[in-house]
Image (tube, rainbow, N blue to C red):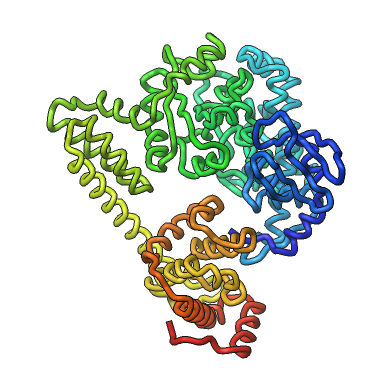
Length: 599
């Protein structure tokens, strides 16, 4: 992930008045040189939250939160640092600059143009819904008409071949951005056609509230075509990293009370749940729950509740999501709805009280998994019990935490009527096999990347498989020596690393040092994509158990590490790093020689 430049960050901070920003969220009262309010981050009756316009900071004397405009937006809207900076920059009309491989001006422009077209399309779909009696009757019959349709932006895509595309091309004159939205596509003959035609539309927003995609449903339940479709993967839309209604969680009152998000299946389930007071409901976008979606939810909640349709198919279909939360070590519960109903049907037929009753009966996710195994296997028969153990060991072997694997194994032993050491050994054996498979896949990727020439340099010598291993070790040492990491950006450019995931991880380490003064492994996970997180796990595996060092030993090790960064940059960066980075390295080599022997 690229870094917003320090100059841009400071420009945003200077442009945004913290009083204006916070007063849009909570009413502020002038008292002396500052402004006061009840804290938006904890419940209180006497105002202890102070905003200082002269210092452009806030401080709560009750719960201790402190920060500036960027950290306020991060905490209040559950955005990461870069998202908060980008949102504030957009409000202030500031063009951000990026470092270390950030999106080009052309890429940022394309994204902005595509988002504008999506917002325009949403207004058009909503207007079409209001004008079409058949669509209006449908949403009214589903209890989603009137103000509900307006609040959720429901719309209808005209049932015509290319009406939306023609209108968009006439208005925006931007085929590139239109194609990036996924609203329209081209057939083999090059002719444009509308993707969502003849369907009820549900706008899908990202965490910042921007429309990045649509879900769409046919009105005719007997139609032979696919009932639901989503936007295709592209510039704006990544369904495995989005959740329907994620933009509403930051304001959820129920989430603040319970600390748990409700994970449901469909758009209408979520809409009616919010309308009935369960404003902590979200849904995956037509697929089973993913780790990226759980990663996103961790910004908002400490745990989740999987709300399962009460019929056998609903429970069986949700097992993959159940497995994902167990593998990820998420604090999860399972609520099974009565009478084979889904949340939408239950709320319409029996009201919020019935939903609350089902949530009150929610069970621990692991206990629920054990009960599902018991239904599939006759645990009184040794062969069946062994099969259940194999299935469970394979699942638990993919769990991230060693302590969690052991705790799960102990509980599984009681359920399967087996000795704890037997189950623990089976789980750890499965974990080793899983780790070996992952390592083989990683090495295979190393070979593939190493064999490929660098972009723009087809004659470059191939990198060896050992390159990535060495680079992970180097990043691990930087995590251990934060003093060196703070100045590493002047010595080593991210482009010197051989793999995109390592480049992303290194950039985020530099970003974390810039923002917080240190790069903690636990904090890095929040900001990394899938490739970067995978590399972070591999980097942490390189770290040795810390040993006590004298001050002199530590200084010598840091000096060796700095020298090694310079030499690594010289070996790789002379060809790959930008010219300004090479100039910095040359200047540093002339200024001084580092002490210590070669590392």
